[in-house]
Length: 179
Image 1 (cartoon, rainbow, N blue to C red):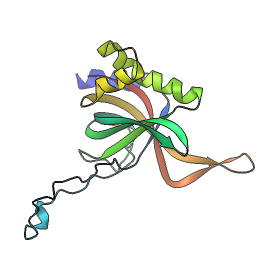
Image 2: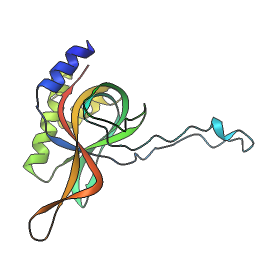
Image 3: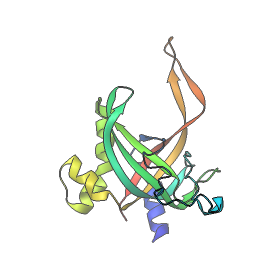
């Protein structure tokens, strides 16, 4: 089944939205009410990494979503965690299970809204939802199979040209499937 999903995902480019990578609000949350200060440090869970995934097809756990401001603009942010790789199409570094990635859609322009619609359409089809909110809620605590490409971030300069921002990448989603 995974080979069929990979062929479907990597063979067709349906989406071209970008993913933004940032820590989720609950990173490293661990009960501390009864924490034993004499316990071994090895017993404390490591924090998940915030990495830009290499190009390929991956399974993501959908943790939550929120509407928030990014650079003073309205956005929908979907918080995900890496579950497994179906195929890598470039070299690492590779994420570990539980590493996080946020997928963001800017709501202040037609491009962001259109890419959000393309991203959500497979979820809508699977669950029979109609509204954006119901579609987002339908996938929380579920899984998505996502094919994407790691791309360098760019910024527009005062003269209108673009330059690559060193050490900053985005994950451009090409296709989404609900397993």
